[in-house]
Length: 71
Image (cartoon, rainbow, N blue to C red):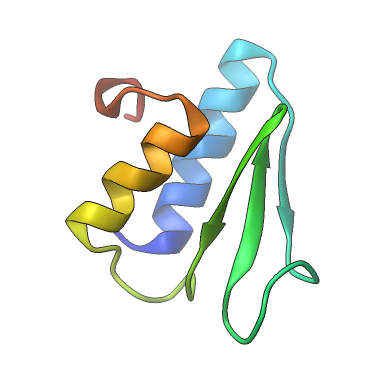
């Protein structure tokens, strides 16, 4: 899954659950940026690159989301 696809699915999940999802490009260095999911946040690399499995799982854990919730 690419970073942009992850962000799109996260925004959809946020709308369904009534949680504010925000991408903050200023809060990051280089191609990294921050995603706020309610009170939680995670850092995402370049939105155009494929997410590695460990990185993807760590991001879900930081946001408190189960893998099955992202459709």
